[in-house]
Length: 231
Image (tube, rainbow, N blue to C red):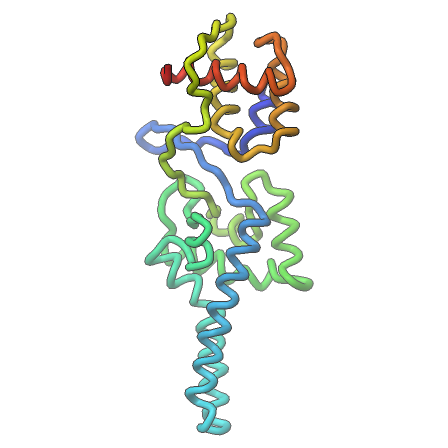
């Protein structure tokens, strides 16, 4: 059952100082790459505008541009992470940078994680950072590991509108509490899974519901609907 849960979600839990459990969903390589490209385009526009403004200053203008390039390249993410929790690129994908304990990032943490980009960027195109994200269960690059930070999805309150809410009766099988949690988790995630993936996951629970394939999917959603009290 633990394997089933890991197949449908990529989350982990942390306990706050108040003893409250918080579920964290780290951002993977793909979405972080998309966010990076958005930020890269924004930085490029800023630097292009700066170059146009000082182009008539000759060598002095070139010196100003190099200073501006340094500030934009290294302090653009720090500025946004401190005041907004994320750069515009990350915000556009619903991401935030936080400490491992879930607390908002501070100047020291942001500066540390971004200064260590000089390692993540090696040998080319952030190769070390990409490998680190893929190998780390919390999807951390080197800068995140050193700073004790992580990039996560911001949870949004959503209604389980993709549950089976038809009026036909469903007979609940004998289930453990863990099995009920797994079935509800499956229903929540089913909107984002292909039909083939849903059939594969439904097969894992087929001994519980005595059904498989698309029939098993429908039965799992009907059971999940009954469990959460949507009937």
